[in-house]
Image (cartoon, rainbow, N blue to C red; front, side):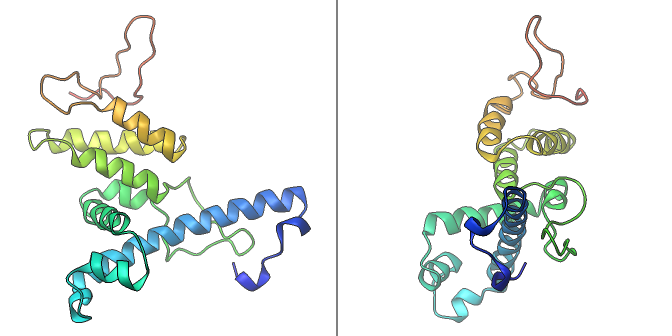
Amino acid sequence: METTQLLPPSRLTDSALLSTLDAVDAALSTLNTYHLQLLADLDQRGLATEHGAHDTIEFLSLRHNRNRREIRRDLKTTKALSKYSAVTAALPDPAAPTDSDSGAVPGAARLSPAQAEAIVTTLEKAPASVPDELLRVAEEQMIEVARSSPPTIFGVSVERSWPGWTPTAPNPLRTTPTPGRPSRCAGPTAV
């Protein structure tokens, strides 16, 4: 989508307004994913120190006038993403071809970077005693839930659905509902 082709919203028909908004949302998600990839590479290369900054956070906060807390959060997310291949694969691929009319990447619904952040933040809270297999199942289930939930609602539901991560806490992957109450998690029962 070229910015020179953008019309003022007041000149768009109702259907054009909705499809343009969808295309912009898809483009923003793709650009935010690309931004995370660029941050990870910048940090890995150590370019911040080559330019006289103490670290990547200081460098970007000065260069782009961004909040250090947001930069720290984004860097933490990029480092955690490398551990979770299913979440990374569910993000939009900035290198993938897009539909020239809508700007959308063809294929299944993708995660937004905000949803990916909520998933990896939750998975990172798991103690070392949680088996890798359980983490993989949890990762897959959270991706499926995220695809049908807005990021703010999804983030809250993830925190409530995966409490404790302790051996004595109820297994969050159990799909056996309490009588009279539906299960919060769908999918296979973990062993």
